[in-house]
Each structure stands twice: as C-alpha cells, then as structure tokens.
Image (cartoon, rainbow, N blue to C red):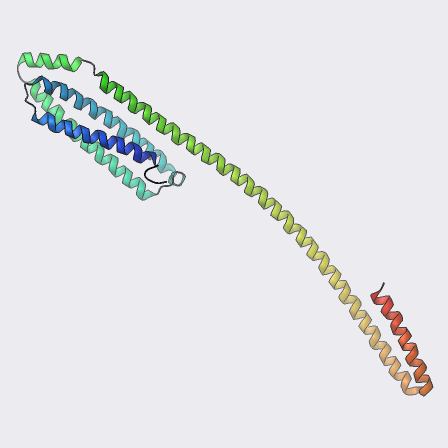
Length: 246
C-alpha cells in the first residue's frame, strides 16, 4: 500500500498540520504582553489544542500497536513500525514542550494583580465550543478510521478463506486424477507383463520345434524333407493364428 493510500499517513498529515498551527500560535503567544486579554484567550486555545493533539497521537499509537501484532496483514514490516513509533514520540514531545511552556507562563501570569487574575480565571471558565467541535470531529474521524480498517481486514480474511476453499477443491481434483492415472499405469504394466510372458513361451516353443525339425531333416530323404517343410509351414501358420489372432 502506498503512502497516499495508507490511513496512517492520512491521519499523520492531519496531526502534523495541527502541530504546525500549534507552534505558530505558540510563537504568537510568546510575543503577546502578559497583561493583554488576548494572552488569556490564546493560552486557552493552546492548551485545548495540546490536549486534542495528544489524544490523536495516543489513538494513532493504539493503531500502531494493533498493526504490530501481525504486520503482514497490514503490508508493513518492523522497520516501518519503528519509523511510525518514532514519529508519534517526536510529535508527543513537541506538543508536550509547548504545553509545559504555556502552563508555566500561565502560572507566572497568575501571580500578577488580583484584577488580572480574576479576569483570567473567568475567561478560563468560558467554554470553547470551537475546540470542542474540533475534538469531536477528530474523535469521529478516528472512529471512522478504525472501523474502516476493521472492515478492510474482515474483507481480506473472507477473500482468503474463499481462495483457500478453491485451492482445497483443486487439490482434491488433482489427487483424484493422479489416482486414476496410477491405476491405469498399473493395468498397462500387467498387460505388458502378460504379453512378455506369452512372447517368451512362444519363443521357447519355436526353438523346440526348430530343433526337432533339424533332427528330422538330417534323417529324412529329399521327399521327406519337402513334406516336412510343408508340414512345418502349416504348423507355423496354425501357431501364428493361435498366438496373434486369438
């Protein structure tokens, strides 16, 4: 699976964009005067963004842990898993550093005048519906991602089960054909053995007859030899018919 199609890289890109926006807002926060009302608002947004990004990174870490149980199902290897773990660790560190700096600045500002403290506490109690909506959206996106991965894995398992069933049926058919061929070969072998036996028997008979003929011809006259030859020709024809035509 290419990076453009891998859900991990899609979510990673979204998180990276959020981190870039977080760092940009943090640099703006560093330049705001400590007695400015804008600082309170931006502080709240930064902390909410940190919480949201940390939650997304945690969910991505869970997805990596699931993939690590059987990387081959997801088409990745150990090197890719380690690369993904390093990225989530780096992202968590970046967000954590921003969060620590903002919290430290917030605590420092709380040590100022009572009026400023009261105003900041009041602002911090105000609900941030935009960040809540973003967090809910991230939650929904992550749930959709996990559900999509689960559906994809179930579809792959179903397809592999069907392929295994087809392979099993093919193996059974091939086994049946092989057994039939084996039986045919055994039958042909028996026929060849029987034919060899008959040929050997016929050859022995012909040798015996030839020897007898030779002995008779030595003892018989010319006329007798001619009769004997005719007799042998007739005998040969009879034997030929008996052996090869019956």
